[in-house]
Image (cartoon, rainbow, N blue to C red):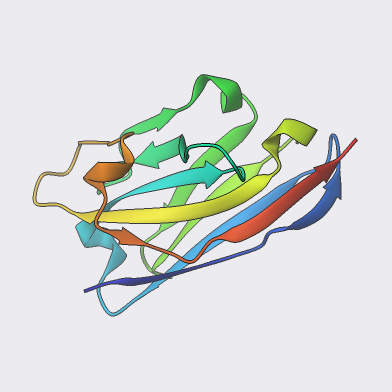
Amino acid sequence: QVQLVESGGGLVQAGDSLKLSCAASGRALSDYAMGWFRRVPGKEREFVAAMSKNGGNTMYADFVKGRFTISRDNAKNTMYLQMNNLKPEDTAVYYCAARQMTLSGIVFQTATNYAYWGQGTQVTVSS
């Protein structure tokens, strides 16, 4: 099975950018559809972005459209989330998730569709 480790979180000011990474080990990332989710204490985990196994299809939550970009580098076995124009309401723990797939073009925005999760990385945006 695949293991996922997120990195790249930190404390930034509103308007700044961060790039999160999700490094996979144990299996080739190219076998998985991937997603990013986030959780604020006291709230449900929420969908941020997702990408199909082949990278051809992406999906974003409305609140990040135009600001965040999901990408993957299968050669490096790593997925990314470029976050621009960060807002204080983006403060959360960000998690990457993976689902092994045979079909290439499907994306998933529901957390229960994903079997593998990283430990999360904290993003804090000050106003």
